[in-house]
Length: 190
Length: 156
Image (cartoon, rainbow over all chains, first blue to last red):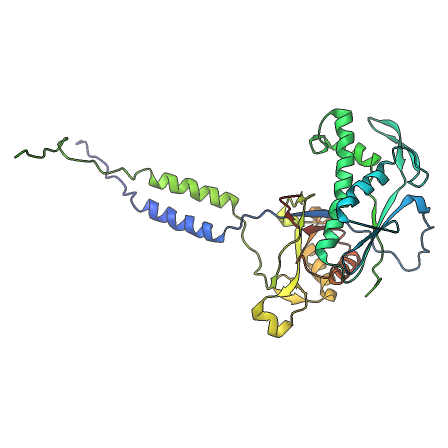
């Protein structure tokens, strides 16, 4: 049989087709990956349950945020920039200060018996508070917890908290549990 | 007179465009992979607040969005200039949230339901009153995992 060359498929329009698709995806693309502050809401409280017993004053870190976005922390006005360090001091209570929260010994994996703080951060805001201000406070509190956890992770495993495996992270979370309680909303001031 | 003589026999050969489709395809695949389609068209103006301690929302399918903000100009005559809630493609009130969450939860796979996250995308200038009532509604709807959408703050 005579050798016949198969005719080449014309690929000239390939670029056009690809360009068309490319432009479509270029237009519809949104690059932003969503990120934000993760929070866990408390489950709804049934109405017939008696209110929980009051927590000792030294175990509560009250943060009030008014409608002018001003902070009142444990009865004293404070700037947002100072909040992280104040919260860290409250969580750690390194010198066993009388005014800072008590400890309770808890058995934790990898660590053995460790004193765990009984402290609770209580956050209350006004209905007129700006969302950005509220989020900033949440952010600072989160930052305090993240730093405290990170420091422990570095001391123990000389690694960042994020690089630890799940069990190790869980142990650290047990030592520094994130307890941010948000009061039922009410109008503090107008 | 000197004659201009071409160096080669034919002059410059045309640049081959044979690899152009390959390059375009490469770009195409990049955009196809990185693309996320916009699910809803926003009817409220949202400039998300800034924060530093961000956590990424991992699986898109597990996330339900609640948008809060001032209606954009074309809807302002109808809905006013107070911050409003947008669920899916329409404006809603706080009382609609519970059924919206229930409906979204229904549409999820059974195994994914406990992992459901609600992302609150609110404008930074919103008053907290509306956010608080949303939070209360979410509590009632048992959608406890929430995420305050925020942008990375560059400088601190």
